[in-house]
Image 1 (cartoon, rainbow, N blue to C red):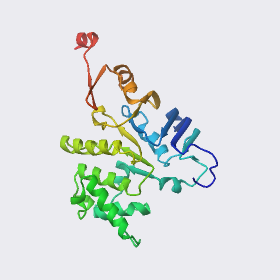
Image 2 (cartoon, one colour):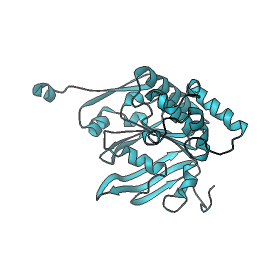
Image 3 (tube, rainbow, N blue to C red):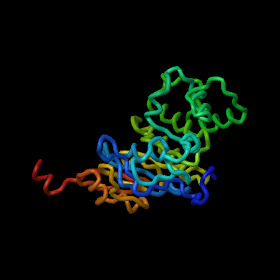
Image 4 (cartoon, rainbow, N blue to C red):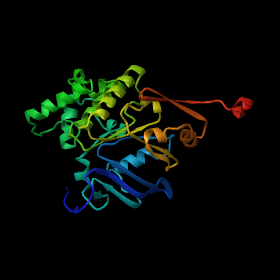
Length: 278
């Protein structure tokens, strides 16, 4: 338990109550009340501009809410050292990827996550650190990239390396911002399969993932949140959230969602009105 926290549910990693994030006089997110427990795997879905990235930046202790109460692992944002929180959170995002120099070696990029820096400098690592980095790169199917540099990687390869880096510190909470964006079909399905295996692992961290597409939700995810214009359309157990009605409300067009096995597939459906207009 962190210093300064006397009583909280240790299984509750994210605890937001009436959280609002405002910028330029406009609410980008909120009010949002949301809880994520240790064994849950969440997917957050919504159209562009729905507030998904802003929400998880607060969950990653990278932004403060404008109002409401936001606790991460028992610590209230704005009243604790954010660096302590970030050390327990693994993040994979395009924003972080954009900061990586092209000449950065993949193996160095992954192992340096323990120091929360990009690439090795003068840090001392133990043999177990190198073994752990190798194990994670193998798990995500990226061991063959270890000696490559960031600038030589494809988009799909970069996504795999970013997930490996996010897992390097054995985080309690793993946040994935569109981990399969920009990947081709084969690469996407490989990564989705791995994330599905991770979601089913009882020793894996809690997971919060952003995506625009229900097809990219790995198997094993337990909960979902639908956002639109910063507000929650629906949240809860994934099957109760990913319905035709809820997706239609969130995306402002008639959507049909089907479940095949453990995966979801969505498409726009034609209505009598849309047929007459076409």
